[in-house]
Length: 590
Ligand SMILES: Nc1ncnc2c1ncn2[C@@H]1O[C@H](COP(=O)(O)OP(=O)(O)OP(=O)(O)O)[C@@H](O)[C@H]1O
Image 1 (cartoon, helix red, strand yellow):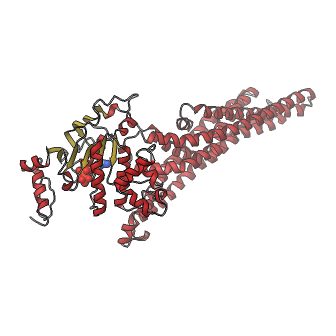
Image 2: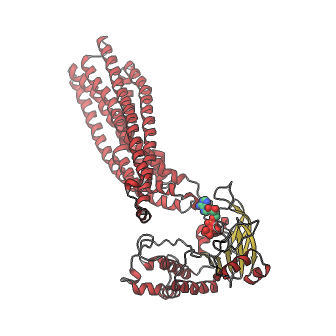
Image 3: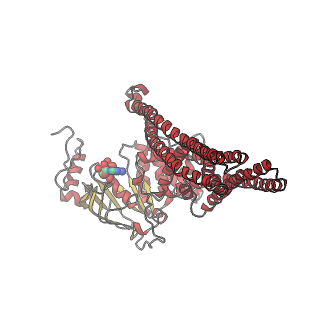
């Protein structure tokens, strides 16, 4: 737990935790010493030793006072450490997430991440408020008491020391069974939580098909699974906790028996035996506390581990300093082979060069790998073979900020943040002037949206941009790209048909983007590729054909078939033929 907390704090702030643990340990030692000092006091009382009693009482008072001061310092440091850990947790998570490859963010991991990040605050507060101090004191106070017992009578000390492995075994057994149960509970909770989120998010589809909670099997199954798992793990937890509680009781019984034996043999005076009995309980007290908290400690430790596991994920390697982009605006994929799973390549020996200031269009059937090309250029993933170069530099030799500075991305699935319209566009260039912002908005047709909305630029667009239509969201995303004025623009054209107005804005913006930048465009409508400097036909992860609209038509290959099928107006569909071949088929034709 302490290792994970140190990782969460980071190397520069880890000393805050070390100081807190050290103060807690000192408090544990002092409380053990204070308990041990009762023995000579009781002995003095019984023997009527007036001089001794004064000295011992004074020592006891000093130790108790020191324990109180240390307790105060320890509590203050605990609050400071909790606050630091909380602020550091979100910061470090955020910093690390941006360095992870996008492949890491599958829906399963994102669901788990959401849970650990939201539960994290409660968990960290709980650890510092209730768990860490008892855990440290459960080590230092009993150790101090054991040393005191040794000092008083070695047989008593030996008996106490022999109890330690038994207790450790019992705690280990309890801890393991609790951890196992907790892992099952967590998996069941995540599954149920994900199903509830899915159920909420996709209400439109579910309602269209008349599904309520009761008719939605995945959610019902997950809730039932959660109930079954909880019932089963509760039984295991009770067994584990009873075992550790029993072990503590057993240790106390052993100590009492040894004490009685030594007293009966005359080795210990009866009055001292009473004080030593209290000391034996002081040995067992912190352990009993910890055994009581064992469930909470295990749960917190598991939550903490899940959180720090994210920080342990391998980040994308980045150079200290970026290689200089010696060919600005140039884009190149050099014999690239890549698969989301290395054993199933999506792009094979894929080569493509986009000269600076030119427009290249990627066309091809759905699933042929066009979007993957754009993702590799943006270094969302790293290639398995070959190289991707932006501005002449391998993307792996560029720091993320330097790579992203060269790119503007317009994706199909435009995501807008729950902020104002202006903030969403400024994302492309936060320091842009008002004039630049207005110009980008005018070209992309966002000014019309601004004029229509009640709060204009300051309208909140809602999470994901729900307050805007799909076409409007795309216009906002194009305005972002226009504002950024990056040397290279990557554009994934919307597959869904845009209405004529949105289409007009898209074309206008596109012409403006092409005037200043290199453009790599994924085209789903062939009208938009006629003027491209280069058309690359992608099929099954390979470059099937390359040329201009006219040269490809003259070649009479896959592109020409595609074009003719489209222009006959009878509909077409792409089917994978032999290497590089598509067939333009009439809809419904054989
Ligand atoms: N995140 C992912 N994990 C695993 N496989 C993926 C992932 N994204 C895409 N794929 C697979 O990679 C292949 C190429 O997908 P890609 O999105 O690049 O095709 P595309 O040509 O852009 O298709 P479309 O025109 O439909 O957008 C497909 O088989 C797809 O299922």
